[in-house]
Image (cartoon, rainbow, N blue to C red; front, side, top):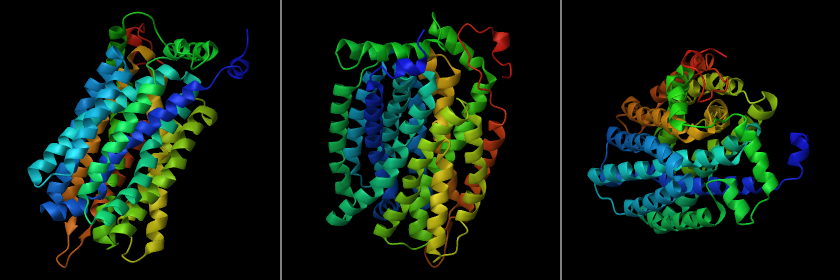
Length: 441
């Protein structure tokens, strides 16, 4: 029998084209959501919103996004990930266009809920597609690369959209232009992506050898039969719920900091709009390297083990987040250094944290497992910006202090690190007896 290495040398690489397209389409998803967060100080001023109202609007996006994870994952398992992604990108593009017309707090809340719900149907299907297209030995790298979409997006988007807004003298036209990337995303999905490799073999886009390689690497950790039974095992697994809490903290830190970083730089440190846009991009430029490295470490150094990467990420993030809110105004070099460190260590975890359910759970239920866990986790994205909005201290002479906000994010990293110590990564199957579903690996 040929070794996996010999077989791999003979197969095509179409699965990586699929991954790149999924990555590009998810960056389009980020254009929409990052635009609102980047312009949050201007939207607050234009609509007359308080910091608490802005935090509520930002958080409601993630509430709707979290709810959508459950239906998004369920639909991906039943009608296929490609159809669900079609629906998602069409609807969230329409809501983004409408955002340019909002005039009051009610409008702001409605578009945030709509955008969160429709974008929420994009994430779980993407991971379902990755589960269908990549064998276990490549899942860390695949998940890590896909995760860089939420590094590349926030890195380039603030620069692009702040220049567009400066050209028009308003933030509103930006949202009209964002309909164009949405249309491009629909076309990319239609031409390059299929639910499973077999479809592309029939179209002549990839070799049967590659499809066999993918299938061989997936079936070894998969199951035959009733997927409902497999999902029952997932729900009964104590480590699954522990993982959900870790993901809750992970996403709370990421989206909490992403929501308020522009306001932190604009209000606490007094940077101009263009300078703020460039500085906001810095941690996400660094994050690209961190996410790729995290996925590579998971696969190659730690041999499909996610806990070591997660622990490095969370433990170093604790002091970085604690200090960043305490940097004295005017100390630009220290701000740049800490933003870079935050971008690296907060994002090092993503390849590992999203590879975890693909490594531990059967392929037949990965869509639902990712949907449930990410749905739970996304409530962290909802809670963190909301609580942070109440932790902002408005200054009498103008501006604001975000010190308490970053102390809060640091505390969440502590919780994530502690729970990660107890995670099990032993693969489960849908035929596993109930008594074994909670046995420590």
